[in-house]
Image 1 (spheres, protein in one colour):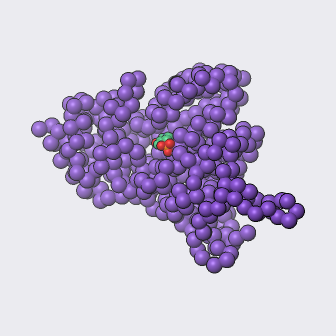
Image 2 (cartoon, protein in one colour):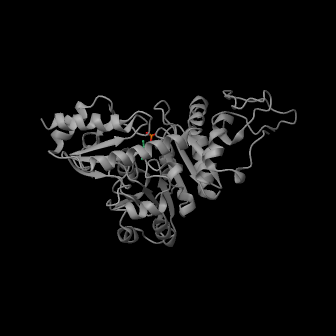
Image 3 (spheres, helix red, strand yellow):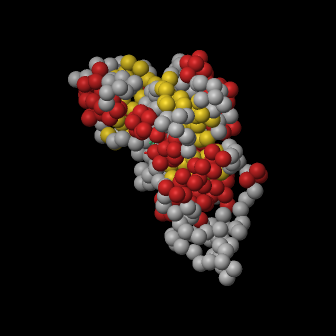
Length: 388
Ligand SMILES: *Cc1c(COP(=O)(O)O)cnc(C)c1O
């Protein structure tokens, strides 16, 4: 259909920079056109030889971005784009059957944990939450023959706990279950769960994949084109959860610079973690890139090129001092979300509310691409102001 480079011949970074080297067959343009049509003309023989009939199940611009994402994740079965990370994640749980058992982590994206607690039982799912970073606890939580899905998130929001993907895959497969990994905080630059034994990988595309805080999107990618993956595809098509073409176009533009952004943001996060560790008003820094972090050894094994753009700090003086610090920054933006080029700070416990594993003195930091010395100076001044 169009000219593309041979994926095997070049690095993922090179392929992403050129969106797989697509050349538009009509204009010879180096950027794929944006496909907005919702309906397509039938052939004289009543078929649809283009492969497109209606835009709810499928869209050519969405497919272009999905091809780049599948390449980045080394996903043999391909990738699917959804209207949000939550739409992608809930499609996986929607593909399970009533009575299925699910194991999920204590430390995970809060809105998805709430969804599993509130909506899981209504769909007949039995969900157990465990300390997934503890391999023994994970091994004891699966019920052979009944557990159908083990869901992990690594590094896990907002404590950035690290789960061993290989070990979790062995436990899940030993019990006859699939392993799905929310890899939003790692990005495919630093971790590719499918190459470590996972069956499915999920991203909030809203975060570093798009990286410019102007698109809400979700991604699933799969290792094998099995009936479970076919069911997820059917759920997206019939439920109408596909990403819109404009959003897919913006996301694809962002994926071209993903390696640059992820590398710079991870380097910034490590530099900040290293400097904040010695700060008089910081009790603890949570970042798997620090050698003393409990997740460092596993992270060093399963992450490459950095440890991600997310870290948290525990502020001396408790909740009031943490909130006062978040109120006193100027360069950092006091907002939710993560992964954008602008750095964000958030007091997480007040967002998550009762039952959260997030300590009240914790501030979540999403590192952008500003000068690290400016980011540190701004946070340092805010910490000092909050401590009078
Ligand atoms: C944001 C986020 C989600 C949800 O994604 P949306 O695009 O907001 O629906 C899921 N997991 C993690 C780790 C996230 O940060």
